[in-house]
Image 1 (tube, rainbow, N blue to C red):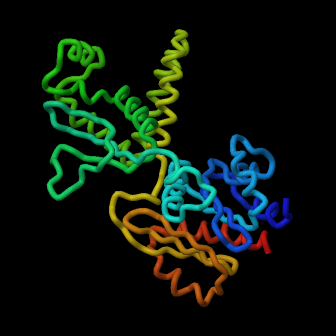
Image 2 (cartoon, rainbow, N blue to C red; image 1 turned 180 degrees about the vertical axis):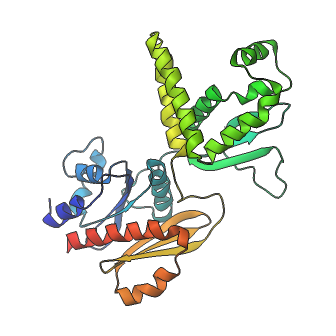
Length: 311
């Protein structure tokens, strides 16, 4: 491996994020995501791991760029947005993996429900009982998370009209018609990332999982473990894809390197890195929205370390 690339890889954090490979002409070759940036990027030079189609690309890599994210879910969204925008030659899957979905919560007392939909219900005349949360990536994973939510907070059993079997299940769970608002409120707190509500949900699922394992119902224990992991994905912090159609530019500077990020219609889909003096970068950095400053500062600090490693 080229010493400059090896030095750059050593600067990558062992955290979730997105990486980008460029060639000697600064053309983007490939964009990927990782739960551990350093380990994932290093693997391209140590083992193929099912990526044999990329073996011809690796010798062309002369530059590595990366952005650290707050979660693997955020990294997945950022990869998808960037691949859609830049369409690198070596990316096989357009738009990355995972289907964008929303969680739909309907608090109509006649038939309260929680489910997964592909479109937001936000519009000029939204229903007063319906609220959608998201977007999230991965329809299957989000459906599993919703199953975990319903296991702990069976909203549908609080409906005014139930079948006999549903009424029996509601009685077993101690759910009554008057519980709709309380259950919906707890679910809403979880979907809006309330730390206490999330902990209560995950702790509750772990208790049920452990009880199932203790009496040797391992299939159920494994299913609940999948629900726990899916819930953790669902509630993980992510800001690079937002429901509001926000458009803005964000900048960060460090060690002579300027990082520019572009959000269009609620999706962070632009990412450039270039050398820049601090005086020249200052007017740009000052226009960065306050809520993005920690993210852009971290991106710039990493870009600066990678740039130094490749000099």
